[in-house]
Image (cartoon, rainbow, N blue to C red; front, side):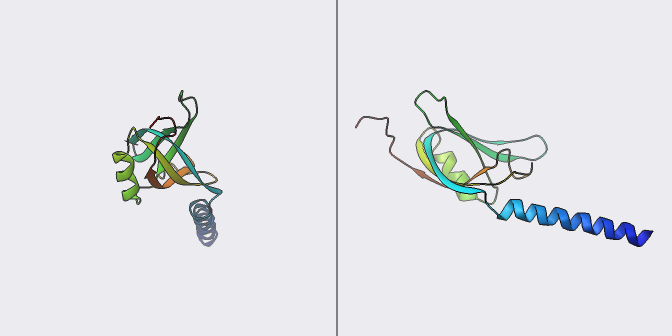
Length: 121
């Protein structure tokens, strides 16, 4: 009986680890979005995650919500620096997320300041 319980427990752990590796390392899609960076915050009650928002329209009707992994320290610093500016971000979309990674399934991997197409030079 004890041996069966250990096998079941180890099997459950192995299944979770395989699922986690799939979610973490296999992207659903990758892409680029641009807009005005309107929010970057470090939030959460138990586990703090980096979250942000980009307005993709003049009226702010279309908002792109994203997360940033804590290991991407340069991306976090760049997002803080470009707050309120027009930016272009590279992102990876995952099938789903875990609460300790972020609130969204979109994870920004790079950010670059761009010239806004809405401003007249």
